[in-house]
Image (tube, rainbow, N blue to C red):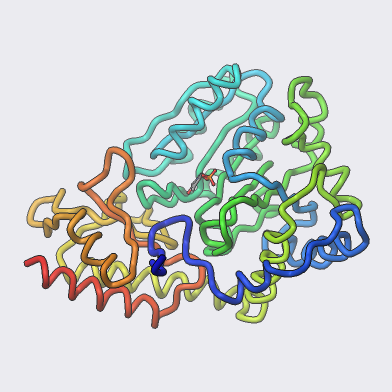
Length: 363
Ligand SMILES: *Cc1c(COP(=O)(O)O)cnc(C)c1O
């Protein structure tokens, strides 16, 4: 099969060097070699996420931890902050788990604002909330810092934050934010294959979890903590992924975290410039655009460029690149371009050159 380079917002392209790092001989997950591997990456992960808490590795996609977090932490009533496909679905997942929950819905394209959350929490009904930092379906980045400030006012509410498409692309300091759970799957900004999740919990979250009678086993946060203290995971993890993670962390620190964040800002700005050049407006409300991907209106706003997106996707496929055609109800109305992971000014220039050619062909 010909190699189609992924420019969709997840999974993203995985480098040859990463695949090679994953193809190391298997080791036992209760061996000293495994403990050494986890012990090597633990401080790197803590530095990356700005925390002294232990970082846990779950062999699951992000939804495993998203569901696990509410099973561990929401006992009375959960507030689901909703502004796109991933955040909206969390309410449905809570319902399926039998957890009392209520949605706080913002229009797709709009962010979740702290004032709205404050008003909900003021009722005193809620003991946990879910928030998606970077709503990948709409390209909206929610104001995490401003929202996290509410934690001081509501210390008993567990703040559960999905940073699936922002972790490693923008700085997130877990301890400084004071939130309770931070999680991400590895197939987005980490630029690893899907199948592993990285997460961490506050002390308060671990105490809350210990009281949850029906938290199950596979996603039991108390088990993750107990095992992580010994540089182990509760069950057999995907060891190739962890070798890949170790390789990525070495890359991140060799590049420098600040340089990595700057690279994401620069490649994201290139996307916005390309959009402006072609008359595509951005789907998110101004001021809340994501840094790791861009959601462009396909002529949805007056005077905007209108493209046949499926045709544009086919023209790009012929040039070896896969682009997105719009998530769920935005299909055809908006489309997304990812700049997360390993993308550079060079690879983005190649993408835009091919997009320009493709658009010319379709004219
Ligand atoms: C991709 C994504 C998810 C879903 O992750 P899975 O790996 O499919 O479980 C959740 N939240 C956000 C913000 C995402 O971008």
